[in-house]
Amino acid sequence: MITIDARGMKYKELNELVKQSMAHGAQEISIKNVNGHRFIGDGLKGRQKIIIKGTPGNDMAAFMDGLHLEILGNAQDAVGNTMNDGIIVIHGDARDTLGYAMRGGEIYVQGNVGYRVGIHMKGYMDKNPVIVVGGKAGDFFAEYMAGGIQIVLGLNLKSGEKIVGDYCGAGMHGGVIYLRGEVDPQQLGKEVKVVPLEEEDYTILNKYVGRFAAYFKFDAEEIMNKEFKKLIPYNKRPYGNMYAKW
Image (cartoon, rainbow, N blue to C red; front, side, top):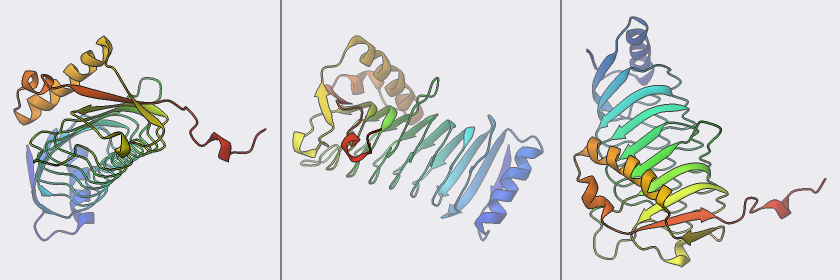
């Protein structure tokens, strides 16, 4: 393992060191004293593992294609922006636009996430992106979602707290959302509806909840004991009337 101390470094210097380490064959890199450094893991391709100790800055893992990033702390905005493949594990909270336009890979967040998580998330052919949130999500969760899987577990919610904010699934036209617990219909975008779970849904949930539990040392069976709500889009072209007819 290679260890990099980011204290006092500019983000460009840090990212160049990471790239150089990978080019010289490093399979595991530990970065300590990370404090707002942006663009860590951006555009990198491979199967290496990067362990980040601290709070990385915006756009971590943007366009990433295959790495395993583990963050021992919180993360800022736009983690996994247009991410193509790989795994991100965040041992804390993440902020807004997590997984923006994400098109592959998996993101696991132990705590809460901010606004517009999974916005424009999409799947294509064998690509089926996944986001699993242990806590709660803010407004506009899964806005304009076009594919993939998003799961919110609502663990350790306080009395009166809601698992998602308002406008959940607004403009959604593909993919599926699973919420562990109740959701007020008034919180949902007009393009989504709640439907019963089928056997295939439990297979999906067992798979990704199991991985979440393994990463963060939870009891997967205990998590699965609570009822989930399944949200799907019922209009494939919610704004079709806004386009010109040919």
